[in-house]
Length: 114
Image 1: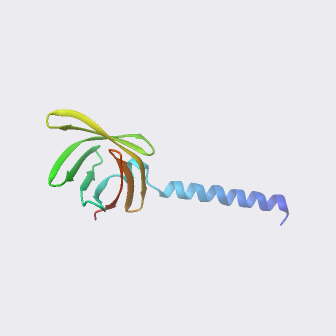
Image 2: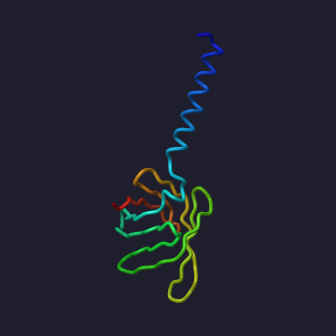
């Protein structure tokens, strides 16, 4: 096989691999949907397909709406004690059943609850 043909074959294999990986992975806003448990605190989070969420922390619950800001940030809108507010989830990465994120300035890891 000549050099130019080998380069073309390698290039096509790379493109096919990228297409395959992209086609098989869920869109980021779908990957977050589900129940999650913080690995440090056992706090529970549930993100629903209708863009609502529920968080239970230290026996207290809060709910609201989540919005994808970009590929690594989500905005959580909620009402706490009658006052509207929001928290940003930043640096969000999801790999299989593990989510890493910074929530209200604190980095953490959560595992998907089956």
